[in-house]
Image (cartoon, rainbow, N blue to C red; front, top):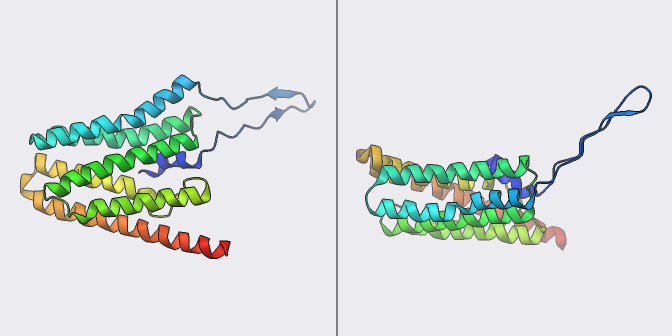
Length: 213
């Protein structure tokens, strides 16, 4: 997922601004942090959840051979992953629940599409397994630390995987002659970022275990 989107993981509300004081010690301006209404936060979470039906639409049009449409929908999925994080921060909806929802939806979308691409021979069959391991370790780390924590490379995992799926669809839709090369390139990039993310979480978990001892 993109770095700005994943800032929702911090779960922090906007910090209150300072109060300006005039020379006679009377406050001249005062602002208080605003909290978004439940309706606004519901809409932000709905934007996050919209990626699930959009992923089904990607699979549908991909199966029908309408790759340009699949690519356009995939681009919309990636855009929503950016916008929900920005909206959550600016509208005061950054919460742990929202962060967990964002991560869970990304996991389901990526797992579903990588499974589909694996069954059609475009991605190696071990790629969905790496997705399961990477996101599983990420969630386990969050449970141990009582909050989702971004690793150096793990924060880019979702974004790289979304981009890989989108590029594969773009190649088939606009440059079919490059489809095989796109399959190899996107699968390699996806496998690499997932492997690094898994190693980061494993090393981080081992360090935490040693500290607890």
